[in-house]
Image (cartoon, rainbow, N blue to C red; front, side, top):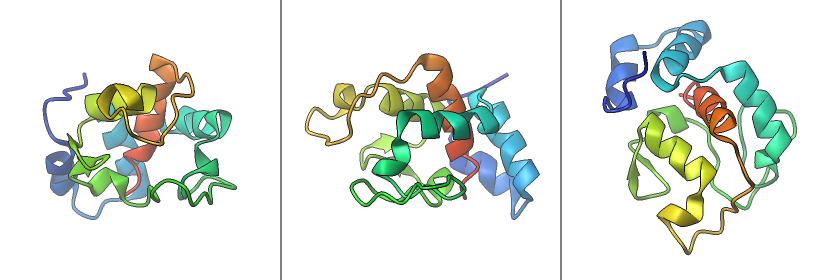
Length: 124
């Protein structure tokens, strides 16, 4: 069961320098999402046209920040605590959090946002 009130940073500190498989398991438990489906959804929504995203073919965008290590960051979008719920909220409706953001609302579904967060939290 997912507990989004626990900051992901604390969960990752407990893991130390674990393997990619451990990172995927932790991301899945934390977000309820599937990293493999998340990688596909990242491609489907074109996230890589704006962001550099490790492990995603063609994700070399220079408009938004690189998402390298996003699983270890304390804040998202410079203002939200890095929790699974906040990440999913940001992915689905960035203008709802920051009306001045350049990140577009591309119509990400709730399930896809969960899976995308599941992938992004493997990036440490």
